[in-house]
Image (cartoon, rainbow, N blue to C red):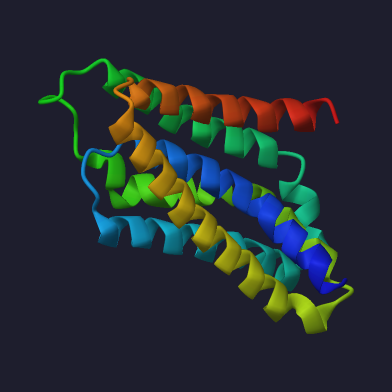
Length: 185
């Protein structure tokens, strides 16, 4: 596998991180940079760590997770999206500060990295490239998450929309898209 293929793969895997980060940025009223960096770091670690995990576990594990990976991603994204939609109808004083809780960030990191779990299998024939691939995937997801959050934060401040509702709908839409793609592929 050549470097260009790995970079393209990394960009494709980072797309979910970017979209979720845009949603998180849009729903944030202040800029908690340490939490944003933590979120981007976890997104990168999960995106890079999942292919590494599957690489070490080999093909035997992938055959069990691949048939249900789309359901896992759908349920997690739909749950978080639904929670965002419910919170969008609460008054500003009622809204919880859970948008950057550890549980939320870890759930999002896991949900966006489900597709990356199957990618480790493609590196089994290329064991000498797994370290480079994992590094590129993790770095790309980290940068995409920071960029997505910044873009979402800027537009969330600039346009007075119910961004939490929009973000929840987007997350549910992403989960539904993943589910439909896998069911009809």
